[in-house]
Amino acid sequence: MKIVALAGSVVGKKTLTVMNYVAQKMATDFSEIDFELIELAKKDIQFSDGRNYLEYSGDTLEVTTKIMAADALIIGSPIFQAAIPGSVKNIFDLLPEKALRDKVVSLVITAGSPKHYLVAEMQLKPILAYMKAQVLPEIVFVEGQDLYRNEIINHDIIFRLDKLVEDTVLMVETFKSLRQKQEDALF
Image (cartoon, rainbow, N blue to C red; front, side):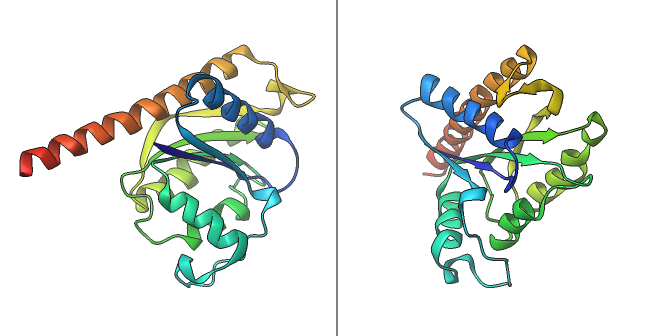
């Protein structure tokens, strides 16, 4: 099983703090899983210009290829100006239309205000549905007040992140099992 997590912010530390917690949880509880956290702030990603993702080079090709090879994605995205940032949207624009078919996708959102709670529902979920992802229904929404000095201080957020990681792994295993049963029934 291969799981890729994206820390989608190119500025600040909130999203990275939360995604680092996700990475620690994966390393502690699921060390047998091939897991990688990709920090978009450390990558030089080109803007999508409509080419096939394989025609790009450098960090752009590396990140898109890892996403395409993954069984699941855990997307960490900040909300800026009541919208997902261009860095996250650009990743989707670089991928083929059905790139996320049969991939499990989990969402972690960081925002400064509870007013942005529905941004993931209104912006991210429709994009992911269009790309044929299997999106977990529960989103972990983290406000600025849930963090202090690059630490998560809200125990409910920690509980929900733990559950998100566990549910992501469980859903990948479940989908693999169902696909295997379908294939076995055909032959």
